[in-house]
Length: 427
Image 1: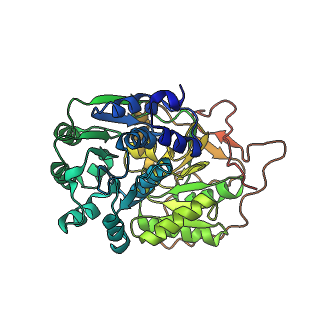
Image 2 (image 1 turned 120 degrees about the horizontal axis):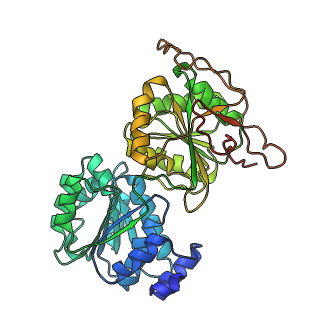
């Protein structure tokens, strides 16, 4: 079914066409009619399925002409998501006179204040900065017609639910509410009951499942060789862009410094980076200026970068659901992606929890040609000296080869021949 059959406005359809979209995704097919019909909605879908367009397109179609007051409020847990969703609204609204704005912390108030004075129709905001503007009288929520609560489970994780409830209470009772959350534990059930009236549920895919377009595997390695294996994976294969996840901000900075010393172009993303640093890192990663981004879980659900060919979990995530979100940064929009997790002996219970959560055993691979120490080699003292690597990835193997060969580990859980698809080269 084409977008035209979904009864979107002509100006929004032009925006969809200009953005390069052709056919709606399953969540768009099911959610757009509900939103256009004015009903409340609880939506759940795997990452990369087009969720933002599923609510942005019908909202823009319903708004009509510019009214110079916020009529749509989209709450997001992070500044990256607020900016990203606002960009999507602006792109789809390019053939309308509707105005959009993202407000979030980490930057000055001046530009956001001046844009609010000019008047906006769609406001994408993080809870803290929005409440700053509400309390100083810059934003009044009495004209909100549509409230979108996005990534509500992430807002719960970040402790935002009390202020989110406050914001909901300031919006008109007669409104349309769209609620998106990957999981709905009891605390979120309470928020949904408070915010929604007879919602329609739209669920695409299984919340715990890994996208079928992602090839994921474990790489068991002694702790002392984790960084060496990371460098070997990068240097022995070709790639377009790689997202490396660590558990801590300090770990992200440390790995980034060592990768730079190994002649890789690297961006860093975590909560201690300033907003300007985050914007520059994301823009550089998207443009190809940086081939590797090292990030904490702020990037697991907080960014949308097309074309990430590879995710590497340098550290195993603390929560099983974060595994799904992390590796979901690749293999988006029907593309094929690769995700590798470096596993040391102390990660055994975490891996069992992840495999139980996703309902499948993750293949174990070994990188051919890497000089492995015994897996249970004791963890070294803290004064580990970083090893300097050589040049960046080798050229693609002739004849369309996969870049590197990895053999199935103990237990024989490799897929097919036991080869792992390598990174795809940019050269």
